[in-house]
Image 1: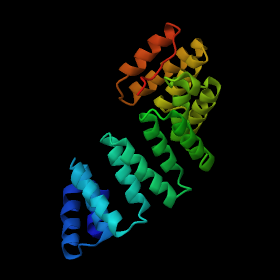
Image 2 (image 1 turned 90 degrees about the horizontal axis):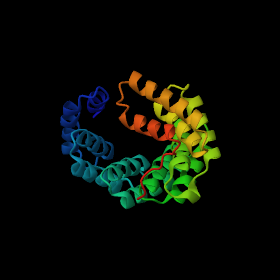
Image 3 (image 1 turned 120 degrees about the vertical axis):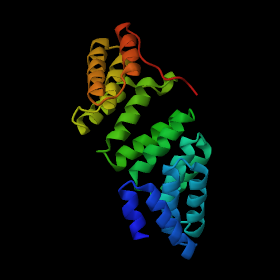
Image 4 (image 1 turned 60 degrees about the vertical axis):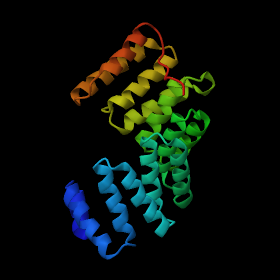
Length: 231
């Protein structure tokens, strides 16, 4: 099993899968091995098999918070948002001080169009860990671009976007883009254009295709804020 972990860390998923499967053969109720096999199956794109492994690990160890969050993440990726929410909620019950779990659940709430729940979770994540850039970025983006007007707050979005930029040394294109979107929501389009152009340059420097960012820049140049599509 230890060798399987080493292989997994080296991203040799085939060798890791072989070793961990052998460990499970000799010890079928080996919870950590089942979880690791789930990870290797997921790396191969065998998502249903990975879910089976995570579920068996949870059955054997009902307080395995990381297994709940990992399974929830996979369900969310498959579009099964309601099941994902249940898994994240259980993970949070088991680890209520884990700020990352609130961020991930908040993002799923947003995907469901439950914007109030999303804002609540992202705010909770920041209260638990004020230095978590992703939480600030996700909150700022939602407050700036939400398709439902009652949930938008340009000033709060700008504060969150600026904090995300500070935490990433102004080098993350998506944090900088969040600040641009906040300025657009505030109708300060000169600043929106300036920061969106900077986000595009950062994206290009990272090898990220800037097409979507350029589309939003055109909106700002036309003095229009960006709105995400509603659910």
